[in-house]
Image (cartoon, rainbow, N blue to C red; front, top):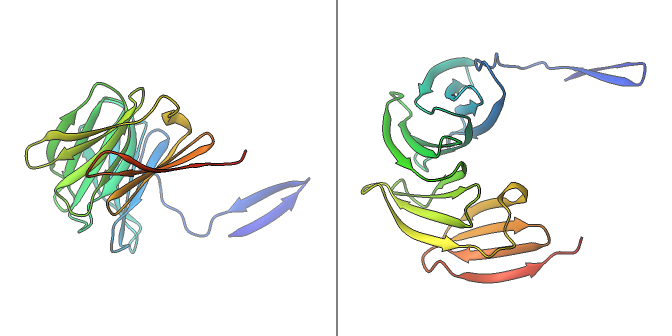
Length: 191
């Protein structure tokens, strides 16, 4: 990246860039497991899949009726899950761009991720104090992990590691067992 200094203001000129392809702000990005593709989603309610080698837009996924907040590739890279402020989680075929499934919730989706395989996903919604574990074969919620009142979605980091979900909120880090839905560890963090 070339940097130019002028009147105490740094100006950066990117050497590699993509035309955004979006008509509004990009809110979410995810890399494919093989590192060849990146998917972006945003305030224009669309998802675009990009080829990183050619720097070209491959396809645009249309189906959400509001902002796309989160995107996640399946472990095998064949599917994409997206969460939106329209209260839906959509499952997409990456190769064809076809929408395969639409899971509906009562609140904005702020997190969605595949678990070990492509059969289950976990989601989190704004204004709901729980994670939802979804079976994609049936399209139904099979587990709800209730999080205590201290949990505020807009200030949390959420990540999935194997059989565990890790959340960080305000001054607490918590580890949750996905299978049992129980909190197994809580660490108080210093401010």
